[in-house]
Amino acid sequence: MKLNPPSKTTETIAIMELQIPFTFLVFLLALFYFFTKLRTSPNHNLPPQPWKLPLLGHLHHLAGSIPNRALGKLADKLGPIIHLQLGQINTVVISSPDLAKDIMKTNDTTFATRPKLLAAEIMAYNYKDIAFSPYGDYWRQMRKICVLELLSAKKVESFQSIRDQESWNVVEHMLKKGPQPINLSEMISNMINVIVFTVSIGSGCKDQAKYLELTEESMTLSSGFDVADLFPSVTPLHLVVGTRKKLLKIHREMDKVLDRIISDREECRANGQTDYNDLLEVLLKLKDDDDGLQFPLNYDNVKAVLSDMFAAGTDTSSVTIEWTFFELMKNPKIMNKVQAELRHVLKGKKKIYESDIKELTYLKLVIKETLRLHAPLPLLLPRECQKNSKIGGYDIPTNTKVIINYWKIGRDPKNWDDPESFIPERFSESLIDFKGTNFEYTPFGAGRRICPGMNLGLANIELPLARLLYHFNWELPNGAKIEVLDGTESFGATLKLKNNLLLLPRAYDTN
Ligand code: HEM
Image 1: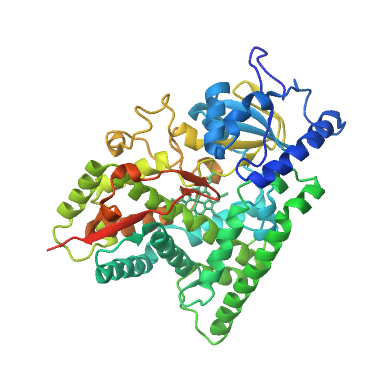
Image 2: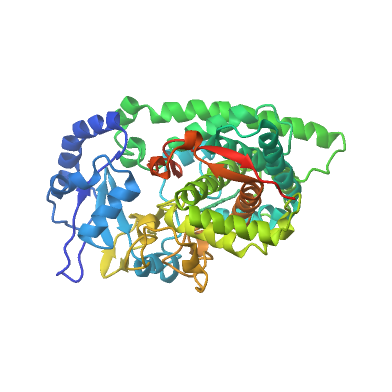
């Protein structure tokens, strides 16, 4: 990477799999091969670089850490823009609001495409989805469908009864069971999965559990730090690690499930039943009536978009609820305050409805603060540079992958007072919002690629969370002290708690 101004130093660090010990072994084997190949290859398209092996000097920052933390530590040492050689992938990591703005606003079009990922190629029917589709006319069409037809405010509102039903089922189940420890993480995840599944394809699908299990499996292979993504042209490595094979197997099974879902629906439609209110129905109607579409839809497009909805819409919401509970348990005063608001505003109501949520200002601040400290996608989704450009004074060559470490930005003392503490009040007098205009706070990303599912995601978080906090007081099982709460993170498709949150609910008398 060419430096400008020359006084700035660059670091070229080769890391690949940051988490999985087995692949680390493969990495060591590959390292020698890789450096030899890259340094001598006449074909690589980068300008001359000061190749050194700072990897060895900085490895301690990376080993044993999950990527957001590892890259955060590197940013502390090397600054807000870092050049990494991640396997074969020329990567730039951004860790400041100003540079994030340069990428997602000032140069948004230049950085609006995504790098190629094996998981997206296989699972998204060769990039026919929205999230990993390359920037261009096809993405524009699908994004428009997504924003206007699938995830519009009106559409999200029309799914209210699903959120109501599923979150009420959980409350009733827990009320019936009485004060017994529950695996809150699992319970929340199941509830959100059912909500998103029902929103997407309606209720009554017997393959739901199987499909979600497969989604989960495929997501763990989609972090972008997999060997196959970091060494795309080193086929022998792919064979050793076997990611392609694993993904193809998962994809075949998921495809079968989706085919069954679609053919069942087509049969009902052929019999004149068309009053479904779910995303599948919208997509099938668009497929049949493709007059205005530049790229007519076929079943693969429908399946790719549905896969996006499951993958992007489930864990993102459930881990946000989970982290909110974690922080509230750790901060009893904030738990008391949010419950006091709920119980004051709702004044003995037997049931909370979505229309009540707008009055719950403190609850909204709590969710905002959770999304600052524990964004489900700590590195957002990767971008790729489409033409040579300049960021922070550095020349960024075409095809460079760009990672924005939002996790680091969201807890950097340069941007936030007392950043490691959970303080919802910090947002009460502030205009900072997650709509993509404040670059120190972008849990949903920003610019053209900003999350189109924000409304649905928040709706799926707010009502279930409000109900769980309204109807129950929460304790740690066996009288454990809050010090035992384990906030270790696990990095996969989303950043979640490594260990499930086990809590004891005690019903609150709403009279
Ligand atoms: C708390 C909930 C959620 C969070 C924090 C979240 C976060 C994000 C982030 C950070 C991105 C990348 C933005 C960028 O590149 O700048 C994204 C993209 C996306 N999200 Fe979400 N998301 C959430 C919920 C949802 C839901 C419920 C859906 C749909 C069911 C959804 C669908 C998508 C899609 C399709 C994209 C790709 C957009 C594109 O590339 O054009 N998300 N999300």
